[in-house]
Image 1 (cartoon, helix red, strand yellow):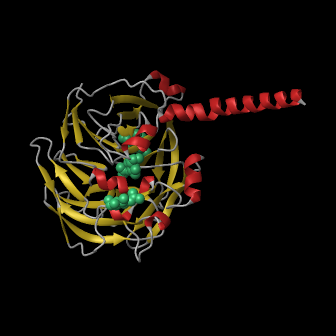
Image 2 (cartoon, rainbow, N blue to C red):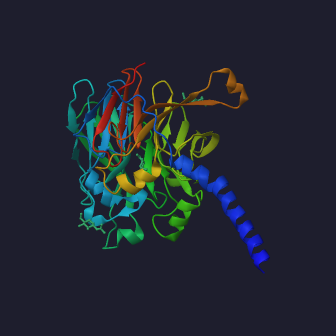
Image 3 (cartoon, helix red, strand yellow):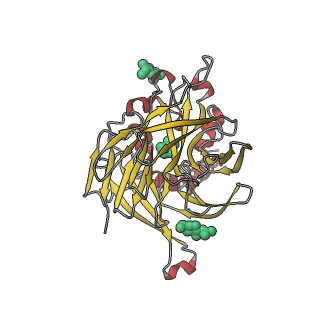
Length: 391
Ligand SMILES: *[C@@H]1O[C@H](CO)[C@@H](O)[C@H](O)[C@H]1NC(C)=O
Ligand SMILES: *[C@@H]1O[C@H](CO)[C@@H](O)[C@H](O)[C@H]1NC(C)=O
Ligand SMILES: CC(=O)N[C@H]1CO[C@H](CO)[C@@H](O)[C@@H]1O
């Protein structure tokens, strides 16, 4: 009896150990357990404390102006549907878009015109796109996580999320509302890539359900249920690609190549747009850490916020944004070296890493190659960080 017991125990231990080695250890590693920080690029930086909890930054390259979608760190701890913070009592309904001029330091909070909804703005992802008919006019696409109507509890039904389209002019001080896009395909929107016509956009759904048990299972088993949707004001919305593992942000190069970083698996996906606006995966680039929102700079380099310590970030910093959280920035470029022939199609370089004192809880990084500046910000960040990274 005892012998059988010990044989079974040995098998169980072997299986558990194997599972740990094969499945859990790599997971812990990419999540940052035991990672030793290597500070980099963080010595020539400054903080802009007026710009807090700005989830998304878009650089208007010709002028160097930044557009930021901002909130308050305290309201984000109550209301961030992407991480199931669904306390509508503590949410902010007066989030705002600001511009920041890195040359003069001038910050402008854009006033909102023609937005008659009483449900306010609770911002998240954003895109700012010069109009195809006049490059001085900009289309501003905003994810708006509204609280549910009719007294339904957000913790049960989730946020009632929509995508708002506004218009502005380069350097202007106001945003004029154009339309609100509501559709069941806009389920758990995170970030948006808008078109220069003001009439269509792609967006990422970061989960396959707003709330509930299936969402919990999705998180722990990295069940690939996130997606990219496409909406056209005249034709409605559809799924452009489904079954993606834990994607977060979405961004696009000047051509029709899209990039989606994943917070569920350490991979960056490269997608090509098809004639019917759907997307197909053309490459999967592995990384050593989980990532967030990506951006593409003028040189075609893709930048992503990497989480050096994802567990600390979600467990501590999202709970109390005053606790610093380590940050890093990764740059992905086409590999032109010899090893490109051996499957290393992309080069991944860590350009910035910090323990959280210079840049805390970074979820978005944007690079301006013309001016040699790197901008870092995050969903609960206490400030915008601007670093000089010209080599
Ligand atoms: C929700 O937010 C309100 C307002 O900030 C706060 O008083 C309340 O304690 C929060 N509820 C929970 C469950 O955190
Ligand atoms: C689109 O641009 C990106 C970045 O500049 C480049 O890596 C990619 O190869 C281009 N794709 C096509 C289909 O030209
Ligand atoms: C648009 C955007 O910035 N999206 C994600 C960035 O990172 C945070 C933290 O994980 C996510 O919650 C956002 O959804």
